[in-house]
Image (tube, rainbow, N blue to C red; front, side):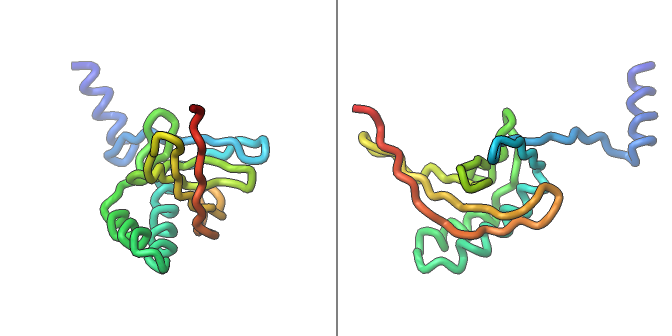
Amino acid sequence: MIAHLAILICLAACGGTMTKQETATVTVAGRPLAVTAADGEAMRLALIDHLAASPDPALRDEAARLHHATPRIDDDQLRIGPWVFDARDRGPVLTWDQHETPAAVVYQVAYLSGVPGGTWRVVKIGEEIHHLEP
């Protein structure tokens, strides 16, 4: 009974909702960069815009699939459908593990520009091939 009362009091004080602010953190240029699912939504919209304008039909198809994706944070990783928030030397990125062969893993990489809590945009899309050890 007391626990239920405490929850009701908290709900009333919190405006009817109880939320947990989750973040995902990567290291960019030696400094932590923490983002939220709200940042993920801004990244998702920027990624859709960029992919939809691509001359590559596979990337345009991915833009259409991302319309139904919901950014989420699991185990300190921001995920937007198959895309994962990460960092490279040049800054924050979203990576998509496109396919794996016996010899390599191929990633699509969306290079991002933006700040947490602000506007995000995709600067360019590139491809990375990571060769696996034999």
